[in-house]
Image 1 (cartoon, helix red, strand yellow):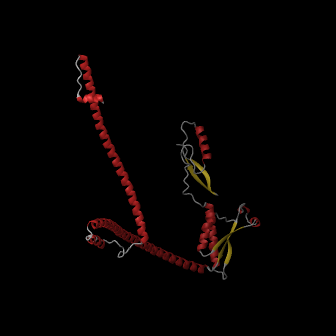
Image 2 (image 1 turned 180 degrees about the horizontal axis):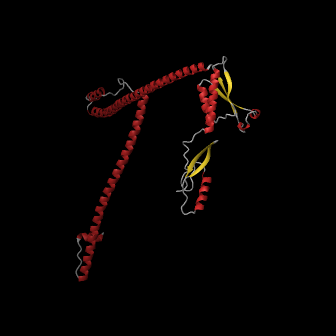
Image 3 (image 1 turned 120 degrees about the vertical axis):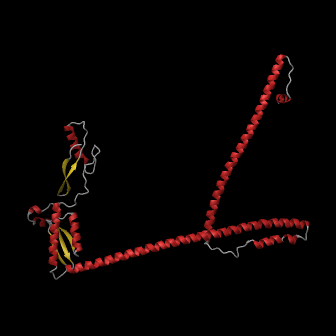
Length: 362
């Protein structure tokens, strides 16, 4: 690593800060080449960049000030002018009272102007900057204090007596604090109210879901009961027709079980009342229908795969049995043919077995 080199760069207008920078060029370069490379890296790296060696520029700007020493001295001078203005304003009789407080040669930077304006406002006064003309610039003495750029004169206005302004600001602060506390209380009450409303809404939603479930179960029971009544009614009518064809007097007796079943089964909705909202109940029916439809599709798919596998296994088993039988027949035929050939070769008459003869005929 090279030793740290002191580098001076302007950081805020007239303020100069000294910071360090560390370079580590390759060791195989000569001293002259290392110096040249260090200079080139410094010239072309810029602020906040990285050099060719992977290191940063070594500058930590977090602790840098936004006001130079000269700017801070001018701000302190402007604060003294404002203090003298307040002392003078306390002796005045007519308000509003306005006076040029900060001369043009006392230049306030943006940061200094912001701080100065905050102090003026906190005292109940207002500050305003006015750009001076070229004639006013020429009138500035000594000439070394005149700037080529824009120059401003700061004027301060006291709308009321400084003591009265302090009382007004104090009263405003009290009101602002009270309004802040009241706003916080309202926000807390609103948060509690919203929480209670959310809990009540959630509780009501649970109750509605329970009512929907109960009404849906009741409707399903009515539909199933009506289906059973309809099926029993059809069976009884068929049986009554059959009985009336055989025995006419027993027709009235055959219809009594049907009447008894209709009395015991809630086939009508005259005495039934729905407790859940109809729209929610219909939505629940649609959702339940789609869920059941999906379940049916899944069950059918599973059953189809199961049946397909079972059928294929049975087919494979039958094909294996058939293959074994065919192999046995082929072996028996082969053995009979060999036996016949051997008998003919030895001069014996061929004697085929019954099964082999059948196979030969086939």
